[in-house]
Amino acid sequence: MLSGSKKRPLSRYRTMKLSSPKRRLTHDGEDTAARRYKRPLWGRRPPNQKAMGEKAAENGIAAMAACYQRFDPASYLKYNYTPPRADFGRDDSIVPWKLARLHRAFTEGDVRGDLLVDVGSGPTLYQVLSGCEVFSKVILTDFLEVNRQELRRWLRDEGGCSLDWTPYLQYVCQLEGRRPSAWTEKAAKLRQVVQDVLPIDVHCPQPVAPHGLPAAGADCLVSTFCLESVSPDLAAFTRALGHVGSLLRPGGHLLLIGALGESYYLGGPGVKIPVVPLNEAQVCASLVESGYTLIRLEVYTLPQDMRVGVDDVSGVFFVKAKKL
Ligand SMILES: C[S@@+](CC[C@H](N)C(=O)[O-])C[C@H]1O[C@@H](n2cnc3c(N)ncnc32)[C@H](O)[C@@H]1O
Image (cartoon, rainbow, N blue to C red; front, side):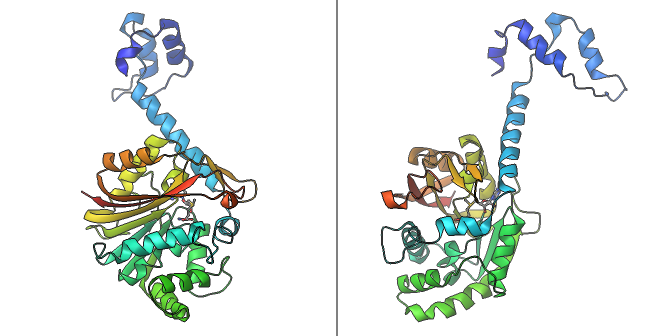
């Protein structure tokens, strides 16, 4: 707030101005830093707090991006997508809970269209196993090339994948009332409908490169454990939610899954990635601020034995929302 800056002691203001002068030439060639020093003290402008805030936000996002350079897809998959977190014999295991929420959302009849985009896919495919039956085109996205490569290995059926997705495919077939052996058909369907695996940065107002997606926008976005895991604070999370909304057509649906009360997770051995700890009220407020109408929010509380030391998550939210 600029009004507060009037009360700031002059000495601090002066130190900030003089310690790091920005030397720029004006259009007529005058050095702006030098001109500032000539100006009488009472005529100096207060520091631009908006610009300082923007710089701090940029630094926070750059620090997150640096953390992600050490992300290890194979370790991440092992930590989160093997038992006990992916125990298909237990309904209270976290992965079956997520798959059941997505199955319901994609089969209620209101989520439909041609194009489904997954935001921040990481090295995982579970989040599109129900959607691939509803949408004729699916686009996966991630910030890191290592994750995009992991996805492409599975899509091309090349072998060498870090996780076997078969039990996931079988479980979703069961949710759909099909025999588990239909998993091979589902795998073929997914490989057929995925059109591309694109780079994305949710901190950019245009998160995907121009022409990466149709201008009309996707009919549905799904995003799981991405936005809170890449945002230094709640404001960045809310901005990211707005940025990804630009990829969605008006009236399109957003299916968002994320962590509650989490301050970090491990992206590999010794790779502690900070997370913005969210509560349900903050998720709802961010959605409204970013132009979505909330249809449903459900919460899963982690049983004690799912707290396996790879993060400090306390719960998971599932949101079904619609872009206004
Ligand atoms: C916690 S993982 C979630 C992966 C997967 N969606 C899941 O459900 O497990 C967070 C993902 O966000 C990606 N990411 C990091 N920075 C990003 C950014 N600026 N924009 C979009 N995605 C980003 C990471 O590469 C990583 O795959």
